[in-house]
Image (cartoon, rainbow, N blue to C red; front, side, top):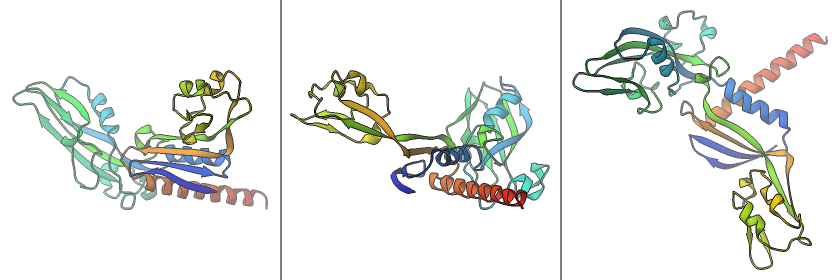
Length: 269
């Protein structure tokens, strides 16, 4: 396997992966979406709610607010046998929301949530929760815990986790007339004509739409892909850095494969 990082920050990661089978790269993608744990609000205790929204709607909105996650200090409820997360400090974090619109209409944002753990806070302070009219109030206790995307998408650490085959573009120079139709047709501006020469730019930008093939009057262009090379891309919700997401996904995938190996060995004794 060969890996080249094309773009990287805490919010996203784009890599070129070569010499890897399709099932493995897809297993990594699915593990990232469904298995890497993050914090999300799971239980909400309403003390007062005179807003226009039902308790259930507000609780659902709270659950979908991405929270910064510390995987080193918190554990999954099943790991410690916790049945009531409100009583398990190693499992859950309490967040308080207490807002009243006293003088005018007020928008309640994620930044109004006050966490007992300064490390577990909303990724953004500007996510709207509810609009309060003058005199309305909302007060509640919310409890966030670790969970996985396979339980509910609110626990998924990514907003995007995708891959595509590495494109392969071939131009038959004997047939090419340098008419420039491929340049006009390509939505990603891969091609350019310079005199009696056709140039192909950054092939990774190709989306395999084959518009160039259809536009070429002499059928000089062939678009295909490499069967064992992929462009892999993830975008973090902000709950975890993109690098940590990849590392945790590989750990989980490795453990699953080791468990499968163990089961197969036991079954074939």
